Length: 431
Ligand code: GDP
Ligand code: IMO
Ligand code: MG
Image (cartoon, rainbow, N blue to C red; front, side, top):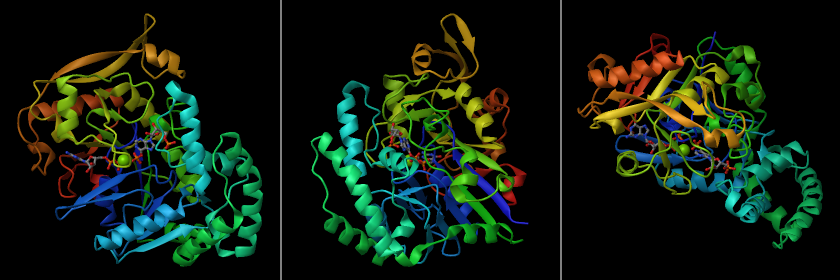
């Protein structure tokens, strides 16, 4: 029977999913990205080199791993071509990559409409990555979108493109934006068909056959984080997909019965880019110090990330939503040297104590974190490779996370490099 592992972001994104996926991908036969698009920015570092991926799965650095961009993604062919060219310039040329013919395709107007909607919202803007992710998912669900497989059938693509332009040019005009000519878009996308066409296939077969192979090890790589989930996140300050492990069956085209071993990736503190409520956010020198040490600037947009204490209310909530079996606690090294560290154990809202996030952001904005103070640790931990060698303060901190969330810590990351990873859980070692 195959082994499966889901890597899912459990805060507001940028938890270190790319690093952990690459870490396990060294042993994986397949890595499947099941949602999101090039709004993601996944960093991978090894041999002193750092790479940033947007829509390409983080197993791309292992030539033996089959990488799949599955049907649940929204794929921008222009950006994907650019991403592949960049990888080639960086010397990554030996890889396997397949694209689902059922994946939704991001068209040029999606970014225009994303930007226009943000501008119109003014002060209430979401702070999107402006990659057109929301408009692309909207078109998928309103059944007017194009799909990657359409590129393989020029006549059908032309028909769908004409229908889409009929609608989209009206929408663009209503915003006072330039419209698109059929011929221009057709030629541009037929160019992408030439470059990417041989990678586009029915990935349902690829993935389902692999699941039934005895020796195969399959990773499912999520993008964003569960607090950005369209259903369970801080709506409307969210992305337009479901990052949770719950999304794997639909987004990859497999039965839910195959989902096992979910690793929730969480920073040892919290960050958020873009707008929206963030109960444990704090400011000042301590926050600036964490931002500097953790290089907390967006991989996609370069925006400084907002900083907060570890939020166990959020972690317990996302652990339950995704069925998290183990935590991968990331960037623990960034907290070294601090006298005190803090964990949010509950929220206080309108005189009530809450142990899960309220569903409306108006209430969430009124939530005050109940913080527990824990003694920090002074030692540099970035070279430690065994859990038991971590300083007592660090181990106490991790233990408190386990107690509050009822989920064991299976992986600890103490630096951005692949080798700066402590694997603790027996079950994960077998993967
Ligand atoms: P992702 O979107 O979840 O893949 O995360 P990002 O790559 O956007 O952001 C995580 C950032 O933290 C990247 O710059 C990583 O190189 C870096 N990183 C990951 N793990 C660690 C760690 O344990 N320590 C430190 N200092 N940096 C880390
Ligand atoms: P990775 O996979 C962090 C945020 C944006 C914005 C909101 C909606 O690297 O963790 P969108 O462009 O998706 O419509 O923006 O979601 N966002 C992310 N924040 N990491 C990400 O991906 C993100 N992808 C989207 O900043 O607040
Ligand atoms: Mg990121």
